[in-house]
Image 1 (spheres, rainbow, N blue to C red):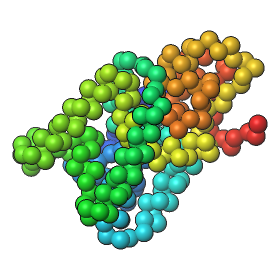
Image 2 (tube, rainbow, N blue to C red):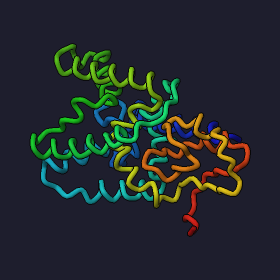
Image 3 (cartoon, rainbow, N blue to C red):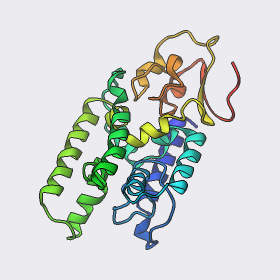
Length: 255
């Protein structure tokens, strides 16, 4: 079975977990391994970015949050972006234009991450949550239809950020994941050491470019398979007829 098929299954699992509160189960202490708003009416998991902001606001060291993020990072790095994150799945569904990544702009996710944490400290507020497009989609819109929220300035701000993000996704594949996602920024720090990783065998590679054409993140997988932008989705593995790229979940071999 192709990796793309397995990936759709796990992405479906991510969507189900994000909405599992519809079964009647209440909030848990599980940290979601991606960007998912814990204000969603059907959420049972905690948003890592929201948790980090709140621990800064209340002056609490996030032992549990950092421990969970460390575990996720060492297990798969940005693999959770490609295989599990519901907002990443939406990025995939709108990924019509696979452009080369703008290297400088791709560091924007770290700027957003630092700005989010500094903003929580300076403003004593979860400022990122008021702009987060995932929150717009998973909380603002559902609560409007449930009659809890109303159309006011905060709601319109959320709709504006969501609309701009969706347009970006249509124009550039995985736009949010490439340039703005703070959770992707955190997980990318583990990309070179995580158990889930791409392995490239240069002896088998003819540099035909087939992997580059299908990469939703706009990188050259055969040259940048450990890059902070790689979400380890496996699209390049499916496209490579020479098996020079393979996806592994094991300790890395020494060069």
